[in-house]
Image (cartoon, rainbow, N blue to C red; front, side):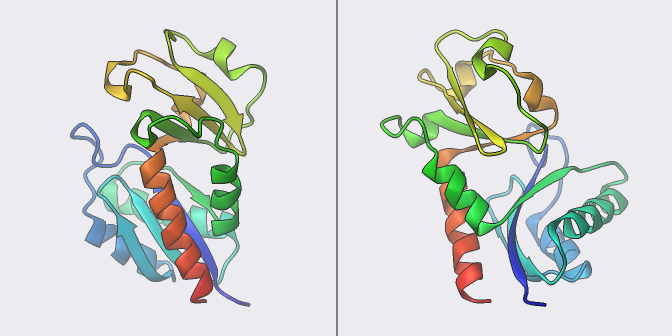
Length: 176
């Protein structure tokens, strides 16, 4: 079986003083479950690596290793380079400043109107994407009070981060 490149996005890692996880430790954990050539991007839990196993097995093994390491669950979401490309191709806010666009990655089924499901929304715009929600924060994320039910199971990244991780995953795909 050929190795598949994966991008892992961990939830609640090194944000606001919670979920401390040095990226060197994350790379070691990935190698410990059989992942190859792990690379991380910034300290918020973004990693790219290759693995021989199917996504569900890789996700389960990495979550178990993270729980053993941290003593608590540390959920994550996996995406392939093709899935990240499809997500970026669906960008509904191409004219917006990348730092003001976020992607809420989720594996939960999204239904209905994402804007109607949101609370405390003022000027923010929300659009569905493949296994994700796109959120445009015209006034910046730091000022927003927006909440959405999908936030409980997902993880948020800004557009710049997603683009960089997609480039890293594409490079890992070319190198397999």
